[in-house]
Amino acid sequence: MSSSIHKFFVISGLLALLHAAYSAAQHRTYVRLTEQEFTVLPADILLQCLAGLILTIYGVVNVAGSFRDIRAAGDTENKTWETSQNRPSFYIFNHRGRHLFGGDYDDSECDTQDYIEDQ
Image: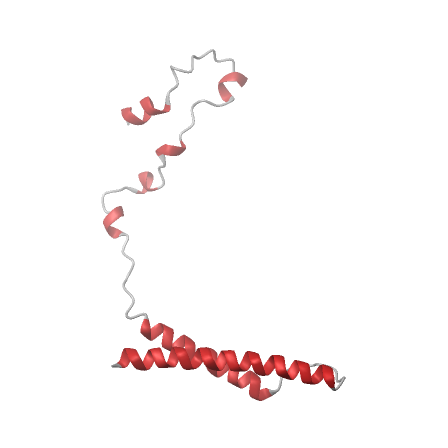
C-alpha cells in the first residue's frame, strides 16, 4: 500500500518538474516577445521546480526500499595489512632495469607466473 503512495509521489514530482520546465520555456518566449531583459525566472516556477524535485527524491528513496549495509569484512578477515594491497597481476619482471644495470638474462629465466606460483 505504501509503495503505491510513493510511486504516486514519484509520478507527481516528475509531472511537476515537466510542468515547471514547460512554464520556464513559455516565460522565456514571453520575455523575448515583449523585448524585455531576462534576469530570473518567476518565483512560482522556481517554487514548483523545487517542490517537484523534493517530491521526486522522497518518492524514489522510499520506492527503492531499505538499504543494506556493505560488508567487506568477509573478504578481509584472513588478510593481513601487508597483503591487503598485494596485486600479483601487476608484477612486472621484464622491464628496462635489467638492460640499464647490465644484466644478461634470458626471458625464460624471468617469468612472472613462476614467481607467483612460488609465493
